[in-house]
Image: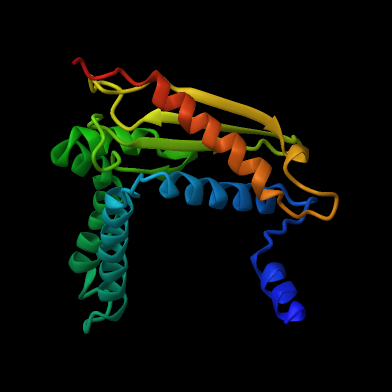
Length: 202
């Protein structure tokens, strides 16, 4: 019985290669997403879905161009059309963001370091979700976690809050993430952001 408990515990342990900063960042980012969503923030995947759709269209255009039933130079005009469509769909994410929703545009402009976009929690007074972003520069042990409003122009948007700390504070020498310490720091940051949100007038 004790052996089964030990095996179960080992499976749940998050371990990183301390010599690989990508491995460290991946585990921390994954844990941040778990923590934020556990606090009632549902992930907003609209931008990701839009990019997947556009990517699929681009692949279909490439396949049609490759297997078109006419050979060059008979298919020259068709190939030119396909080549013209590629940059159109590649860059159309900007256009779609403008046309669909200003909120979605804000998400796109913040996407560079973002690891999570959310909707506002259910039952909350705020009308805007979060943009959670992180940085772990190469050859550095300083992990920076930032929480912003998904829509800074919203009247209910809170002020940006940030946490910068050495990853050595959260990992053992064997690369095991001490989740209790990390959760405590991230939850404190979320609480700090919530305190910065404008309160609803009574």
